[in-house]
Image (cartoon, rainbow, N blue to C red; front, side, top):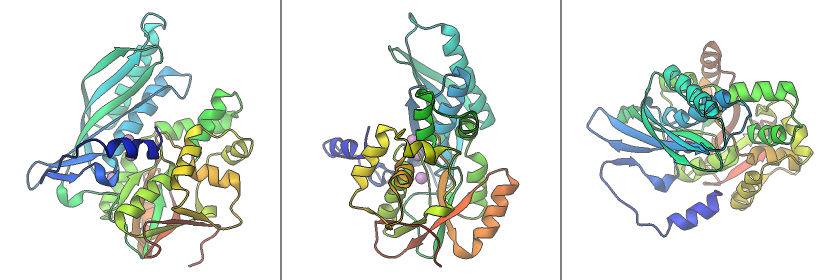
Length: 332
Ligand code: CO
Ligand code: CO
Ligand code: CO
C-alpha cells in the first residue's frame, strides 16, 4: 500500500502511548521497540509479500532476508521468527510451499535465529514472509530519528530491485541483472548492521517499499534535518536505469513519487528515469545509515572487509529540515 493511503487510515485508529515504547508508529521506523529493562529492549516486525522470482527457494530466502532486515536496521539481533504463509494448497503443488519455507528457514538459520511457528491461510495468490522478534541494548538502538548535520549517508546495497523484478515478470531482464539483483536481495543485512554498530552508528533505516527517497524522507522528518543525495555516487544494479527508461517501473514508484512530491527536489539535470530509480520500491534493500564525515573511509573499508559493497551517497544538512535534495555530484 502507498505511504499516503496508509497514513490517512492510521490517523483514524487509536494510538497507544506507553512509557516503555522506545519506537512506536509515529516515526514510521522499521520496527517497534519496547523496553523490557535497563539492558534489553524487544524489537518486533513483520513483512510478507507475493513472489518476485520464479524459484520458490530463492523467493523464500529473499522474503526472509527482507523481514529480518528490519531488526538489523534497528541495531538488533533477531531471536525468533514465525512464518506467515498464504497459499492455494488445492491449486499449487505443495512442493512449492516446501521450497519457500526451506529458503526462509535457511536464512533464519544464517541469522542465528529460530523459527518457532507460523500461520497459514488458504489464498489464491501465494504470499510469504516472517514476523521477527529481536533484542537490542537500549543504548545501542539505531532509529531513523537521529541523523545529524555534518554526517554522510552510507547505502549498503544498490538500487533498482523493483524495476528489475518488474522486468523479470515482463521477460525483459538480462541474466546479469537478474543474477546480481536476486543475490543481493537474498543477502542478509547482518554484516552491514554489525559494522554500523561497531562504529557507534545511531541513525539507520533499511530501504524497502517506499524507495530510497521515501525512507530517506522519513529519516529527514524524524531527525529534523535535511538530506542531500549525490546521484552519481548511488550504486545501481546492472541494466536498471536502461529498464527504467523503457518504462519498466513498478506502480509503487509512482505512488512514492506523488506522496513525496513536495518534500523532494531534483537538480535540473536529473532525468525522469534517474528519478524513477530513486523512488523505486526495493525488495530486501540495503541499510541507509549515517556516520560523521571524517569516518567515511574507515566505514567503507570495514564494510568491504565483510563483503559489503557500500557507497557514500550523500550528506545530512541542517536546512531545509525534513526535506530531500538530489544533485548530480558531490560538491563538498
Ligand atoms: Co524497514
Ligand atoms: Co518492513
Ligand atoms: Co530503524
